[in-house]
Length: 204
Image (cartoon, rainbow, N blue to C red):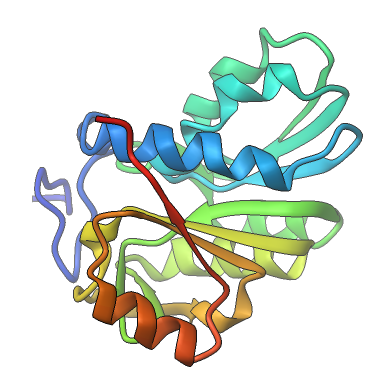
């Protein structure tokens, strides 16, 4: 009822408070790996994914930075971080995502430019990334348009799955970082298709 679920499906995303507890080792490994794509002085955009939210606590070591996000969880970390100029995107608050989305958020994004976007997706089939909610897709696409460099972070378990709405092609990202549980055949197929794939080792 109300599209609130624990397990995600092709139609509905699971609640943020549940997703943040899933695949913690994978999220933390991806967060550490993406720091190589950030330099002091950058404007960094983080989407509302729990994967991107894992990056926020690590940004204090790269300063100065300006960080833009629509994620309330990320905002709660960054408001207490020294040497980070923080811009929180407004909009309609959605409890499922613990984030602001909608027209107000998209309009704000059209007035901003970032050096790098760090984002995630719900599912990947072939070379296409998917998201369940069309409103979230619109915000993520606005973030793509507002960023010079785009980094996609993916837990390997998202491959071979689908969701209702196309987000974008993996070839549109400057780097696609994937945890090392991805099978070799899938990785080779992605590289042959022109995906700039980076395999991230998850600590035992």
